[in-house]
Image (tube, rainbow, N blue to C red; front, side, top):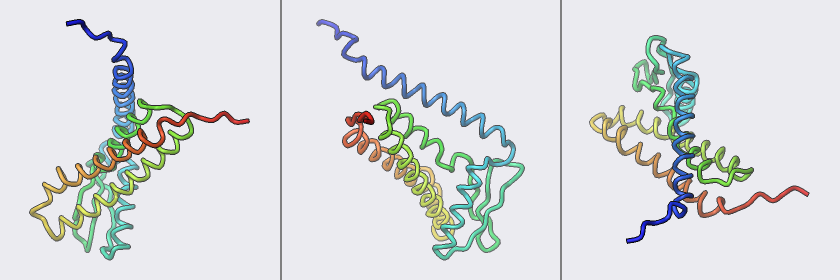
Amino acid sequence: MKPLPLKEFKPTILFLVKFIGIYIVANLLYGFYVTAYSPGPDPITSVTSRQTAVALGVCGWPSVTEDNEKKPTTLLIHEGRSVLAIYEGCNGINIMIIFVAFLFSFGPIGKQLWIFALVGILIIHLMNLARISLLFWVVLYLPDFVYFTHKYLFTAILFVIVFVLWIVWVRRFSHLKEVPSP
């Protein structure tokens, strides 16, 4: 049996090296960012929590947030009761890093990619706000399902959204080359 030439795998290997490199560098930078605010929550987690409270208020569950200065969490409070403790892992940044690492590894890098990345990040953020809001609802009305919905269901839904965005990028936009300006 004749071995396959490495040349055939070059695009795949290059994609994996770029993806892993971007993912590691972005996570290290994000780790430094989060650690800089220790022991309290980072600003992105606080803002995400406040935006969730606003969304919940619009839906009829008036809520407020309170940063925990001794832990990296922001509390989501409804009717004087702490319903959720939102950690930095809940702010959606890690899934955005995975999304962006794929896009920039797959390419081509240009205006289309930057626009798609920003739109995708916005979609992921909005879906994450919906995820936290739904988890809030589960805590209030279906507390026996909190673990399952938090750990599996809502996480899976976010990854499906990212996967669909990747498919849209690969099928509709990745083949477009930048048209030079006249």
